[in-house]
Amino acid sequence: MNIYIQPEYEVVRDRDRCIACRVCERQCANLVHSFDAETGKMQADSSLCVNCHRCVCVCPTHALKIVKSDDTYKINGNWSNQTINEVYRQANSGGVLLSSMGNPKDYPVFWDKMLINASQVTNPPIDPLREPMETQLWLGKRTAKIERDEKGRLKNTLAPQLKLKVPIMFSAMSYGSISYNAHESLARAAEELGTYYNTGEGGLHKDFYKYGKNTIVQVASGRFGVYKDYLDTAAAIEIKMGQGAKPGIGGHLPGAKISADVSETRMIPQGVDAISPAPHHDIYSIEDLRQLVYSLKEATDYKKPVIVKIAAVHNCAAIASGIARSGADIIAIDGYRGGTGAAPTRIRDNVGIPIELALAQVDQRLREEGIRDEVSIVVGGSVRSSADVVKAIALGADACYIGTAALLALGCHLCRTCQTGKCNWGIATQRPDLVKRLNPDLGYKRLVNLVTAWNHEIQEMMGGMGINSVEALRGNRLMLRGIGLTDTELSVLGIKYAGESM
Ligand code: SF4
Ligand code: SF4
Image (tube, rainbow, N blue to C red; front, top):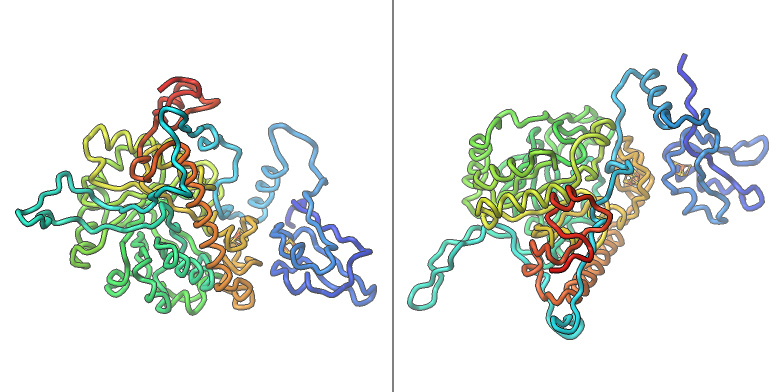
């Protein structure tokens, strides 16, 4: 017999307000609510609630709230309720605990321990409302020296570049982990914003080929959905070597989310777990990686930049140095708070390092080795606001990937149960009745609004620093100061303490 597991949340219904319209029952994919015909009243099984807030938002009389259960085991500083429940769940199931979204643990957030500089008097600020402020940039290899012939024509052959109107892209999220409507929203928003979204490892649905100019396609270890047309359609190709939420392991999409459409796009059977291997079976060295980089370039006539994505881990600076020499045009680094549709809980919460520390070390190492211009750096893994973007660029990034923030803009309530396929907001699900809850016409507009708002804020912060282009901010660590950081942390980040002079 299974051990009883205490519910984490409690559904509280105001009986005076509830009109038993049964909207909550119809809206909850977790089957929490039911109608008792005998009493004529609604009931709730709180043990099934994941606190997604859907019923709270749609209840027409505001009769519902979800609270943290105050039913608790005996207080124990060593064994929290959650830890005890996880042991019970594993004792009941014998299985690996699965989670989704990013690492929720209370580890330090280094973005919040860095402050941005502002100019005054001798180096005056720039008013972004009245003066030009450049947030457009290009990603890819930079040519060391531009040469022109006697008529002023360019003699160099420039490496292929990605042009971004804003220093923000949407990070990899596969069709399968997220819904058709979520993918459509991301694709349309990327097109309107002049930036890029990323297929993740799930292949590209035929309907989205028309957004190819704004699409980054992924080649991951499972090679799901990878074929010539897929590569040809894209603006850039990303080789996924690692992911921040699950460094060192492969991908996992539960069978419940492999619908007929997803199986066709991924070229895999329907309803069966899609598990991509931990390593690429043809990559065991930088030389092997180089072969794949050049195979992909060869297959696409050397017209598309190749990105290599890695997870932020202890030795990522050395790995990045190898990647820069492998012929890749862009390195993407994903921090340990990066989101996922499904990952083993223990891996998500205990493996990897913060993106802030990884970025600082990678940028510094590439500079020291004189190869920083060989590659662009894109970072993701909990970039939560425009201030995080500015700090990332000042630390050395060229641009940022946003994932969780983009999902929030689509209406995600961070219940962190995407792996179940029962997302009540129509985002991380393939169930047709749930998918249609996300209207892509509205979803894409909210994404455009979010990135447009962040871009205004980035311009304001740059203006405040007296800097008028993203390129001039890149790697400008004098614009950052640490607060509440140890000497070691300051040294890893390569920044001074607040109050230290230039
Ligand atoms: S899972 Fe979501 S919709 Fe269902 S009861 Fe809980 S908060 Fe409401
Ligand atoms: S995408 Fe859906 S299931 Fe995943 S965290 Fe957000 S609301 Fe929950």
